[in-house]
Image (cartoon, rainbow, N blue to C red; front, side, top):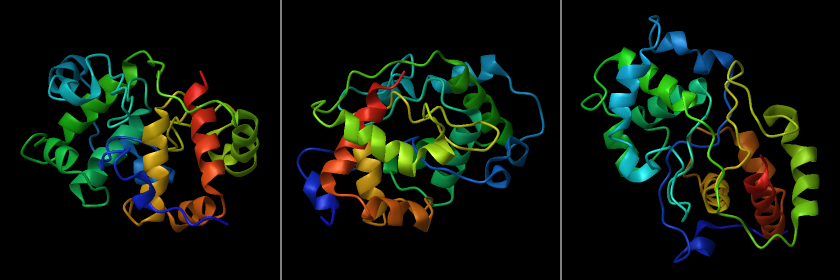
Length: 214
């Protein structure tokens, strides 16, 4: 079995984690934990202007995979990730600043921006792998990931499970490598064990398969 290290990505991928794949229990992602008021999409749109320089005006992310596509991501996932950046459970200097109480001082701010992001139409990514191992990637995903993330990798807002389908190939890769190198403390130990059971090629094939799902 090949030990996968973040060093394998050096020079090819920039270190940085923004909103992305991590599963949680419903209690961890309950939007009521952030605010009990109804979301204000107009206010969320205004707050989102501070995100477009990295995530794109339509939430499509960057082609390089440096930042993920967040348009249409589940509200519970966006809420949890913003809170995790605040609590030091995810690491990225850019997102830690954006999610800080200085930038989003009120619980309602997180509620509003998460609601707006989730309302955006999902944007297909153009960032894929070489396509050579899609069948193997599908097998790995079906056997190890689909029970939580769903057969189509659509995730679940209610269960707090993020959508993975159509996410940037290089972003997905980086998050899996980061988990193995203990750079994603908000992911459970079961994720690390799962990724460690795969070869490097299987990780790449799975990320490629997910990036092409619609």
